[in-house]
Each structure stands twice: as structure tokens, then as C-alpha cells.
Image (cartoon, rainbow, N blue to C red; front, side, top):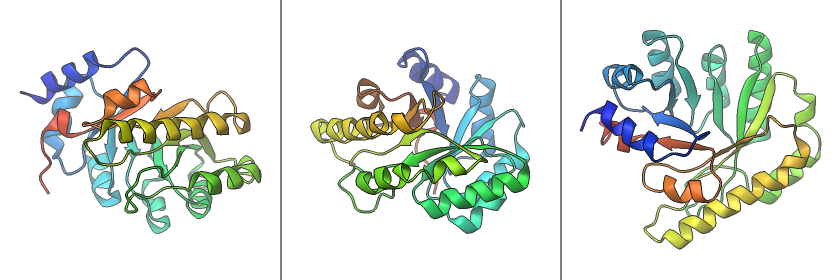
Amino acid sequence: MSVASNLQDIRASLREGITLVAVSKFHPAEAILEAYGAGQRVFGESRVQELVAKYSELPKDIEWHMIGHLQTNKVRAIAPFISLVHSVDSARLLECINREAERCGRVIDCLLEVHEAQEQTKSGWDSDALYEYVATGAIAQMKSVRIRGVMGMATFTEDTDVVRADFERIAAVKRRLEEYFDNSFDTLSMGMSDDYPIALQCGSTMVRVGSSIFGQREY
């Protein structure tokens, strides 16, 4: 199966209004260009160095999403061009993105990453800590970031009940936070190759699909 036909199959499984992020991390520029040729414009990367290299090499109408853990000392490298940061997991990181966006004369769209999975290895806010932080009003003072919604991952398990429960909790976090933001707080990013159909049933508006499009990654 080709990248183009894989993309066609994924798109056919998505209802109208769902954004497909093609996760291109560890895949070469040629594979991204094949997806680009099939009409895909939104791509997700998890490493800043790889993201910057691909941005410089590939067409400039690509919308790049940062989906991996982002260190504050790496924000400056992507601030001039990044479309959406999925992985805002601390106040310190958000403040850094705001500063770098202001320096570039941009407003950078961000998602608040919430941790609901059972694995401790996954990053993200504890939901209670996130509610507490948002309620302080600190985000409203930042003029160079726009909070578009929430991102989260489910536990890596074949138990679909566990996966569904994780996604439902993430969706509940977004609903609870809606009172603090305007209508642009419209994104719920959850669901990957193995579990995105369940995520869609739980209200996801954006799915991050890699191996089902590009095949297994070359590490």
C-alpha cells in the first residue's frame, strides 16, 4: 500500500470537520512529499531538530505541528513558523512560547496537554493542577499565545474500556475549561493510529496518525 492510498483510507474513516495530523517523525522528506502530493498539508513532528530541518527543505504551505515534549530551550528554533504546539505541559513552557512568539511578532496556537493515561512516562498536566492554573487568569495576560484546546493520550493497552475511559476524562477536561476561553477553544487532539476510532467516538476533533499512513518508522 502506498502513502497516498493509506491517506485515502484514513480520510474515508473520518467524519467532516476532523483534522488529520500526519505524524511524519522519523520518516524521510520523500515520504512527506508523497503525502503532500496526495493533498495532505498538516504534519506532526516530535523532535525540534528534525522539525527545523524538514521545514527548511519542504514546501512552505505545510502546517507544522509540534506533538512531542518541548523543552523551553528549543522553543526559539520553531517559534517563527510553528502552526500549533500540542504539548504545552507547564506554565513555564507556555510563558516561554509567549515570549518567543512576541519576539517573532506572531501569535502561536497551543494546546494544553493533560495526563490521564496510566503510564507515568507520558507527560502532561494533572487535571486538578491545570484547572487551578487556568483559574488564576495568568493565560489571559499572555497576548502572543492562543489556547485552542486540549491534547491527551490514552493508556497503551489492548483493553478498549481503559482507552475509552481515558479519552472520556480528557474530553471532560476540555469541557470544564471552556468557560475560561472564547470560541477559538475548539480543539480536542486525541487518538493515534491504534486508537483514533475510539477517540472520535469520545469527541476528538483532531487525530495524530503516523504508522497507518507511512508504515512503521525507521529509528
